[in-house]
Image 1 (cartoon, rainbow, N blue to C red):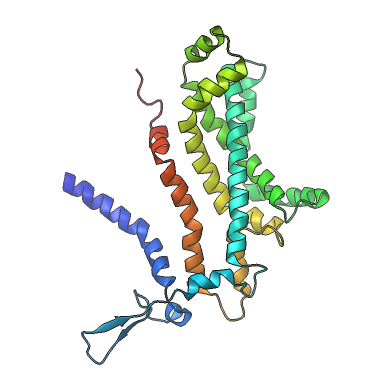
Image 2: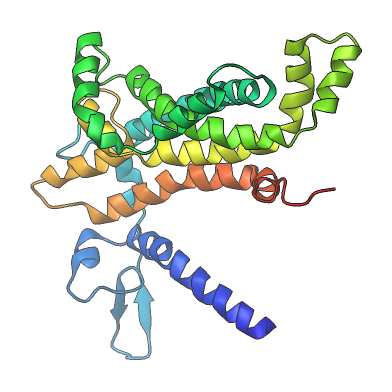
Length: 287
């Protein structure tokens, strides 16, 4: 049984890691080596006079060229990566903060239309985002928000807010009300009880919510292409713009950039992995 489980996990791990391994190998190849009809699995593998001897040559130029401006782009990859960091982190922080505050209100207070408001918030996820791209574009042109960091931050915050509210409400519902009641009896205000009691207990849910919100904002493509023809262009839109390169797509540079682009998400997930694993099973075991 253990052997079968290990084989299944190993096969899944191989399938999941194969694209990343291929990108890593391609990032060290030359462009000619990357697009040849029969590509090498390793960078520039060439056979010498001795058929048993194979030499391997790799280049780091693809990583150094990420600071260059390619044809079809307005800035270098590193500048676009900075745009993605600003937009992704700010929208995630805003969505988690607003979602936590709203979820606390829905969890702890009774008011008219509470269930209707919760359903309305959830219903905003039913419609494909690109269905509203035209009115959003018109509104952003009127407010002069197209091509700005603030425009994408506001948009991604709004689209992730419904997810944040519903995820955080589930976590806050699991926190016993007795904790707050004891704090209120001891003289804490409602805001102080929220800050000192709820937030520390809900940090697991906040970490889980932040991961999902960051991934959503980090990989978003449709609005990034539509609203940012110039200015704060994020990495997904930058990669699409390279299709206009008259010399052809610089696949090795794209592979190098994609690896760097994936790294912040992997790093953030590793940093919050303890909260993430606990959050996946939060509330499944009742005392």
